[in-house]
Amino acid sequence: MEHSDHREGLIVGNCHCKAVAIEIPFNGSFLNLRKCDCSFCSKRWAVVASVPIEKLKVIKGEDNLTLYQWNTKVAKHYFCSICGIYTHHQRRSNPNEYGVNIACFPNVDVRNYIDVPYVDGQNHPRDN
Image (tube, rainbow, N blue to C red; front, side, top):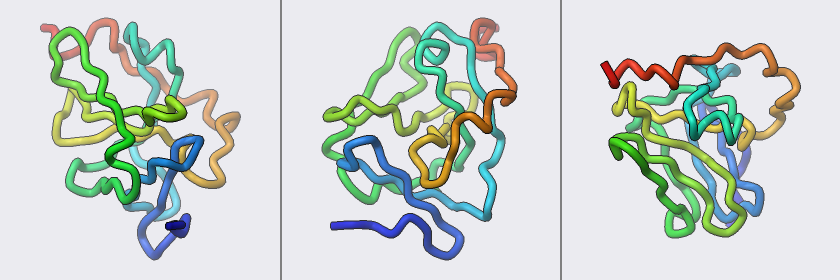
């Protein structure tokens, strides 16, 4: 089943193999763009946007998602079990939000996001 890339006020993103599709609110720009320099995020170098947890919907392939957790096990990082692409994660600093990988969405040129600021994940606010 194919999903449209954009419906009024919503946008659909996919992993690389398109086995997983997620839908988020979208008004023409992503909210709260950031990168993180923690031990995990720095290895995947994804630019993420914030989405309230109740606003993200997995509309295809939920059974293809793999969960990765470590350390405190508060953050929940989701990947496609087929192609390995990180799609989203429940944030440790705000468990009421997901961080979504903006590269999963249509017409995103990651070269336009080189200057997105880093958050200090090496000194996480929840570690204090």
